Image (cartoon, rainbow, N blue to C red):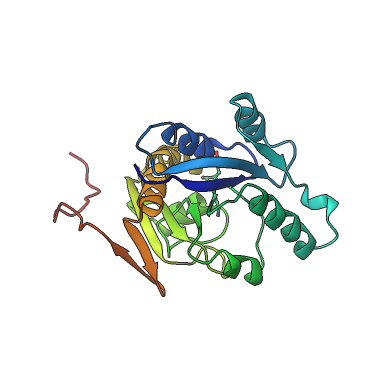
Length: 217
Ligand code: GAR
């Protein structure tokens, strides 16, 4: 197997997507290795989870930095210290400046709990329910300076039930996130998904022409 891509994961709290990535990366044939789990919040539960599994962890407390730029300088140093080649944002809730994002252009990916470009920002499940969509989901994309934009690598869809609350829909989407993110990181780290300009090229076409339906039996 060719060299694994050195990947840093950045979180801000629970870290369930980080856990899904870490667990996937344990497979011998997975093309990424997790070299750092970082958080802007020292009390993030996910940091303790990663620490307990012997992963390298680091808290870079944004409240202890005078500016966004100072925080990002520390973050950049931490990423360079582990020779990170790829960054996976997994519930990382800090806005990153355009210069930092550009430094990691096509080397930084994010998961967002909606089918982008719909429902950017916060409260995505409330937004989806208010819009009355029958299909919701999640998206993994390369990061660009505008929040929740960037070339889309992969999406997963889940049906919306008439009885759904933001919590029930959120739980269903989160389950899909845990499957989608490891698959999307695999695509990027293996080189099977490449970004040229703002377009994604896949090594393989999708293997089905069937549409995804949201219908009841
Ligand atoms: C996930 O649902 C992720 O998609 C979302 O935060 C949650 C983090 O959960 N991210 C965003 O909203 C980013 N715009 P986790 O910490 O358990 O992975």
